[in-house]
Image (cartoon, rainbow, N blue to C red; front, side, top):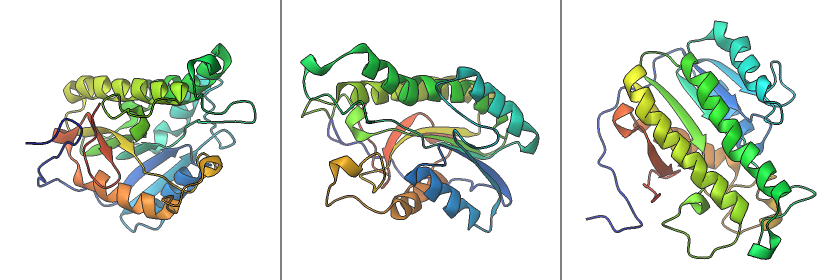
Length: 243
């Protein structure tokens, strides 16, 4: 029996992504997003990879809701897509650092964090999921283990934890709807681990790994998951995480 905080999934035979599959990476200007674009561009089975971000053409800017719909419309003709990865996220800025106590909470940080980590991905689900292939496809949203309610033992980081927990609920709920309209699609929330990037740099840890290593592991998990795994919250090593 799995423990309350550690889930496991039996390996199953999964139909791989088709040869010449097409992929989109949203948040491609960040460390993990850029590493996904590079890895996919080196995969001989990947026929096309598009990297979208605030300065790309088309652009995706979560401060401007309409940009998400416009970007989806702008790339639709190059689809359908077999893999869509959402790698954008927000933890800190020049104005905000993760809250350590209730007294640090304020609207501006909550709004900025939820816009990037929850509202933006919700719009990606709305506008990009129709671009998925009706055959085998995957849609992956980078979440975070600190967004696990069941695994929260240290507290703090209120906005970030809450925004990722809300993202997990969006992914789970969307997986139920897409199971009806796109039964061959797998939708995942995925924890990338501690990765060397702009997001994690101020909180430097000896455990931080190069983005390339994290992406290699995550792509291995993505390729091993089929529609029967849709709606799961998993780590880069395939471990199931508690909600």
